Image (cartoon, rainbow, N blue to C red; front, side, top):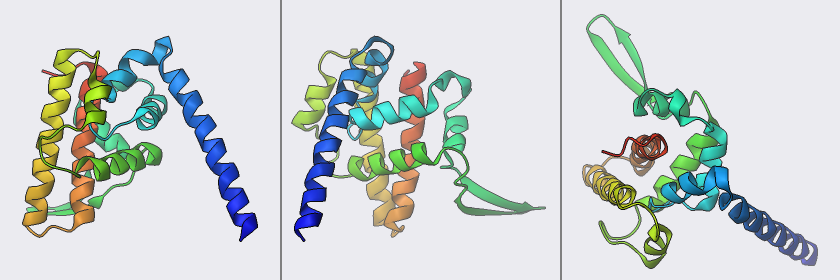
Length: 181
């Protein structure tokens, strides 16, 4: 047991160093502006923002938000034949790291009271453009309401979280490409 606790302590120290280095990198010039904007969304912290930004690198290569969602593998598959259309599970094609990051962010986003901003979110939004903050706040409220509607309809929680992650990916694309109108 002592060996496991020693290993845990070592890993926690290592994670702390990595997070500190990530914080430093996020404040450097190629990342500072976009990482700060992404952090305006309730559930996205520095680690998630840097992961999304580094994995995608060029959001402008996706012509629409739906194209970005498809790349992440968050869009439902379809089995069509003639007049019959059957929706399937998400495709899981594309970048698994981005998909998992967005799903984890969606898990955090749906917690709490709809429309209420915590102190942490307010501090992350400090110094950002008002348009980006408004866009992020509207996105969070919309996603929280959508999640609660889906749960009240009896939809499975995992399906609801995945749907929120898909829509969150569209808002991330909007922030990264400047389509926030």
